[in-house]
Length: 175
Image (cartoon, rainbow, N blue to C red; front, side):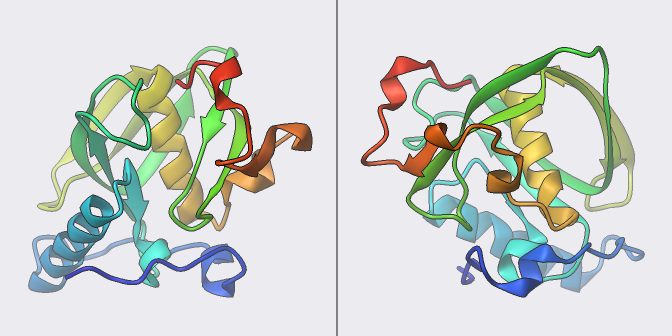
């Protein structure tokens, strides 16, 4: 089922989400189905449970090709529950980001270039990955939602924040 995505200004987006304690349940399966349907309907690259009003540490992400990110490399379809993110290396990378909870806007956002993340899948199996570039950016963006952080809170230069149809995004290749 396609769910309503909360928009910036809704106080539910500013809460710290609660850990998932039960895996492989019908409720979790329904939540993930709804998140996938909603993300696909809106051409998203990822979605966090708090964005649809569910106060749990659950994110999904992944895309092979996406009209909102036409130059982005593929990111594997992933369910990540109770994530832990650890940057490796000190290098940051800036790039354009948008968000389903901040529709019509884009911002130039710094993120760790390389990242190690670990968590659980929907069955409760633990997994881990080392990623970089766009994949690392997507993971960091979605996991920020679990801590009540929206990408505009990370923008350093507000000359590079605005409406997508007004900004000149072509001056920088999107990661």
